[in-house]
Length: 199
Image (tube, rainbow, N blue to C red):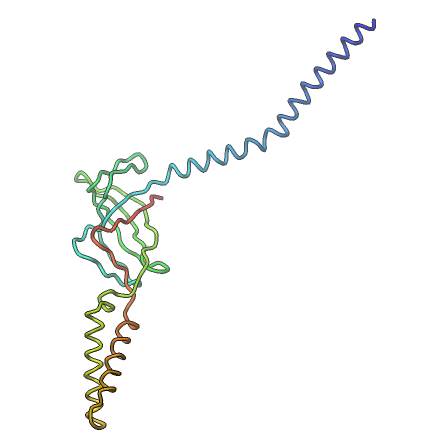
């Protein structure tokens, strides 16, 4: 009788532990699965975002104002696959540079390859503007300084004998003005790589 009761107790204890283990799996298992699901979802999002390395299709350097829209094409620098469609190197990307905070952003609307045009929704990060190098180059500053020096000499003649200090002061003022008042532009070099991110 005692043996039977002990056996029954052992069976009950075993069943209880099994139930408790199952309950623990349900209670504690769910939080452990959540990061895995989130990680899988993040991986899916990354997989859907393709990068397209491209360069300007223009052979000359572009100096673009940061408050205007410019329609220029790009050229795919390296073949890549976007949404199951392979875009080979040399394909033409259609789009435009649009104003963005701090410069311009390239917005692609299509891609031309193999004689056909396909829709493409991709954008670049902001291409930052800078002082126009055409206005801040040594030659430009020297030219501004020369104009300033001439102005100082003329003022010296108007108000009295031209003084060397007036001429030098005019030159310095002209040079500083040319550097400080230079417009801010976005410079696109022909070989510069522009990374586009598909939506």
